[in-house]
Length: 470
Ligand code: GDP
Image 1 (cartoon, rainbow, N blue to C red):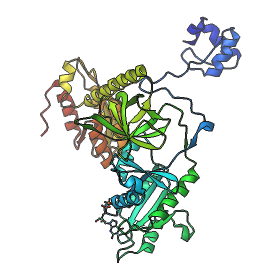
Image 2: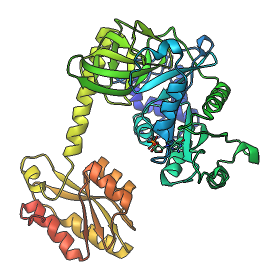
Image 3: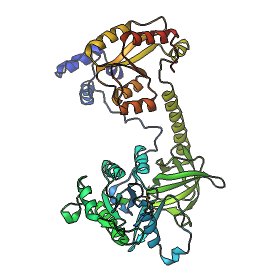
């Protein structure tokens, strides 16, 4: 290929490489530096093509660090059910609206901003790590600091531990709010002890985790908590350039009867203006109106500002990334994303299965039946593999794409999914993760105890004579 590109005979190129001390055959890869040297040799300039742009992504904008300015931190509240996440969010909200604003209607748009000692803090309104993780799974990272709420009378519970692990996985700093200290059974020290077992050592014990005793009911400790949030946030030096096209994340979205698709976006970089063309996931449009968390219409939204946006042509999903761009790009990228999504859906639904195999062979869709084999002993694998690969007819042949000893694992399922293969387990079963993955990836997993049964099923499926499964 390279010789063709530089319009030389292959032998000449191989010879030149040989002179450089590089021994290659005709179909061997050479790296760029070597190619460049050979190019020099022949007086041909060799360059590297820029990696192709992904048509489903908005082109990156230049965002030099020196142009970024401080932005408010974004906080997520997590913790076990009933430990007081919602109450704490309410308490923070109520104690921190000034009298002028108190008259206005506060609007639940999925996030709100509070002012504390002249500084702003943004709180995401959907507590819990489920929303947090769902967003992260979509590649969105919006949280700067996680507040872990632990009830002082109940202590560390399963979801407390989950929340800790999720925050740690996202590398988000944790501040612990020990809540319900007004309760008679409250025992903050016991909570600290339990948290220490999960590597959250309180500062007063020589660790580095800030723990603040609060009561959402009596509204005590709230200002301490806000102060600590600002302190932790300050150490992160959170910055964003407001003078760029807006970039953010959809916090929540729904279809409103009167107003059409309504999405709350947290602007994370740049500024969003009325009239901007935006794209969020597969939906796009022009910003028709923006409403802040106080129910006021606004004309622009700066970094770390949550706003409700009207004007998208469809309802995006929470966690979708929002970008402001020109109309042509927005429409083009949205179309590409829709096409890609459809393609993925078709792929997901078209995994091979013994049940519809015959039909698909007849339609000429499948010419090779790929199989992943897992068994308890190596001997069985050899026997199964050899016999399976003998099964074929005029339309289809069987190929074992992977075989191994041991239980069927998630990675077997992912491999089968990628290869459009089915999995045959002999005297082994899928573990819990593998079962879950098989369900989402729609991979057909069959387990057997008798080799003859396995071979029989595959043979019957190919001939369209498989007895239906009940
Ligand atoms: P979430 O499930 O974590 O959002 O918890 P909630 O905010 O719904 O609170 C669960 C229960 O605990 C409710 O009955 C609250 O009234 C109560 N609760 C929350 N915070 C406090 C507190 O500081 N003191 C007391 N005594 N009860 C609280």
